[in-house]
Structure formats: C-alpha cells, structure tokens
Image 1 (cartoon, rainbow, N blue to C red):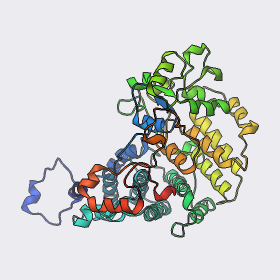
Image 2 (image 1 turned 30 degrees about the vertical axis):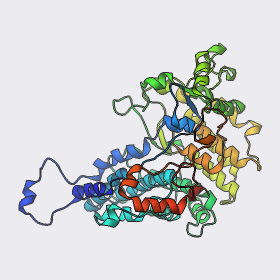
Image 3 (image 1 turned 135 degrees about the horizontal axis):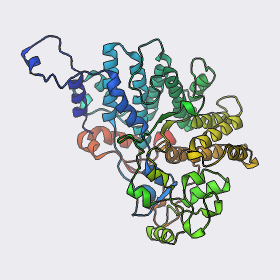
Image 4 (image 1 turned 180 degrees about the horizontal axis):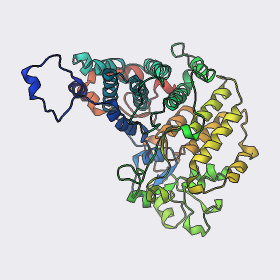
Length: 492
C-alpha cells in the first residue's frame, strides 16, 4: 500500500487557498478541487454495497467451478489487499460535508468508513488504523503517516464501534437533505436502522470475546435492542441495506451475460444436501435440475451437486454426464436478479435469535429465528417461484423449531442459506466464527494441506513500503508467521 500517494491525493483534492497568489491562477478551472458530497456518495455506496462474488460462493461451499482449478474453491489463496483508497473517498465526502454544512453525510461516512475498515481487519488481522485515519483526516506527510503502525484488533473494533454509535446518535432529519443516495433515497431513519443493525453484526462477530471489558459487547448489544426509540432496527425487507440493479448499462447484475456464469458454475453437493434435508424451496431458485434425471424443476430428486474438494477431473466428468445441477440460468441471463445486500432484515433477526440463545438479551429466540427465515424466503422468491403457502408450510415443519442443543447451528445454517450469492464473504466469516455449516475438505483437490484458511496474508506492498510495522504486526499476532492458517485475535 502506497500511503504517501493516498494521503497526497487527498490533500490535493481538498486544499483550499487562503489568499490569491500567482500559482493560484495556474489552476485549471475545469478541474475542480471541491465537490458537493452528494456527488461523491453514489460511487462510495457502490464500492460498499456491490459485494456479489462468485469466489466467495466457491469458498463458502455454495458453488463449484468446472473450467479450471479455482484457488477460492480449493482454499489455495495467498495475499489479500487493503482498501484505504476507498476510505480516502469517504474522507473527501466527510470533509466536503463539513465545509458546506451537511453533517448527515459525515455520519453516513463514518458508517461506510467503518465497513471498509472491518472488511480489511476480518481478512488480514491487525491493520493500520488510528495513525492512518489521523493522517487521512489531517493530510499529513510525516513518517508516521507514510509508514503507519498497526493497531491490534481489539483497539480497531473499539474505534469502529464508537464511530458507529456516534453515527447513529448524530444522524437527524433536522439537517439538510441527503441527495445522491442510491440506497435509501435520503431517508435518514432507514440509515439509522441500517447502522444499528450493522452494529449488532459487528458485536456478534466478537462472540468469542464477550468477556472483553474494553468492548463491553453484551452491554452494547443490549443497549441497542432495549431502546428502539433511540436505536431503531430494520423492520422488514423494505429496510434492507442493499444495492438494486437495473437493466441499464453499468447498473446491471454483475454476472449478467457472463459467459463463465452461463456454463461453468454448479451447485455444491453439500449445499444441495442442506436444502434437500430441509425440503427448502430455495433450491429451485438457486439451481437447475440435473439433466440426466429427466425430472422437472420443483422436484427435489432432480437436483444433485458437484463436490468442492474433489479433483477437477471428477467434477467435469460428472458434469459431462448430466448428473449435476447448474446454478440457475437467471444469474447469467437476467439483468436485474436480487439486489446486492450489505445488511438485511433477515440477518438482523438471526442475530437477535443468536443473542437470545447466548443469553445476551431477553426474548424469544425461536420467534426471531422464524422471522428471519420468512424474510429470507420472501427475499429469495425470484419471479414467485414458490407460493406464500409454501413458505407457511416450510415454517410449520417440526424439525425447523429451535432445539436448545442445536440452536446456534440451526440459526447459522438458516443464515447461511439466506446469503447465497449476496452479502459478500459474510457466510465464510460466520462459518469461521461458529464452525457451521461444516465445509467439506476431504477430496484430493484441496490445497493448503486440507485445511480451510483463517485469513489472507498481508499485501506485498506492505513489505515493500512499511516493512518494519508489518513485520512487527506479524510477530505480535502469529507465531507461525504471515500465512493463511494463522488465527487472528478475533476468532481465538
């Protein structure tokens, strides 16, 4: 990561002259250095909310790729990346909002900034945070700015949680309107709901650290849930934090007309088994019948999958025999499909169910769990593939009711089903946290010694430009060095 260029770019964009000098007249008037935050917000929202990823689906055992050996599927990835460039855009928006007196953009910016930070730390572990954010905001260029130290994850999460609380507490309808908003069309109340629901996700991601006196996880969670007047939550799918697609060039579904999506992606057999065992009608929305069965769509016996851990030759042979279910054609042939979800009402209800099960809050875990399932079924019912009666019957299955001994597994499994081809890498992170569902690794195709990676390695740029600090971060976290199997603080 080339920090100096990030910070310099930010400083140039936002520099405001105090008096006229000769140099000022050399500026190109057609290249403005200031912009209304409404012009910056749409692009930042696209960066944050557009998270549909076939690689995430492969790593999360939803899909199998048949055109080659995928590192995501076979767990052979190595280095990750840092996205401070996205954060510079948020900082620009925040500072422009302060300049022209539109504070609501600043508080939405705090949420978006928190999201980008969390994406990085969940993938890598410790990252530059306090000094890096300070440098961006102040446009400083000293050695501490260009070679920032790394913060530990506990400090990062403390800072992010505080920023999210400030954003929720400070957003108000009394301020100037939010224009250029692709997500909620300027509806401040819905932004507050999203920020609060997202905060619940962040807190639950820390479930292994619930005893931390620095973070006060259970208290923070309960503070939100117990005070709906101050901290409203998502009320239905209509409140989902999502980016919709349109049949307009540049705004279409990411895999629309993608040749590989048309031919190379099949459902994973372990995912199909989960859906079949539950008689889940979303199977008919997610995949197509295996042609060799001769059975129609809507018949559970018509569906069979490939094995994510098996060698490529095994999967291509089974595909060639027509014995595997391809991903539903709509993912390649429909320009719209479902929206890309950053945070959904369904996920929020699953979080509440898990919190109640863990004893963090009082309430009926089964009710929240069933509400999450119902919302997820409604969300996924593309082109009304199944009826409202089917949803009612599904929810009425005795085996769906939460059981004390398996409640966490049931909740996470339903959350997993609901996040097929949306919500980015969230399903993978949840499996890493809870162990559910079990991702099979028994086949000979698996790399990495048959193990599921716990993280991504730090980018090469870090070792080229910030070596002392990244090496100190590695030593402080990972006894085995910078490798993909080391366990970060978050999940210890």
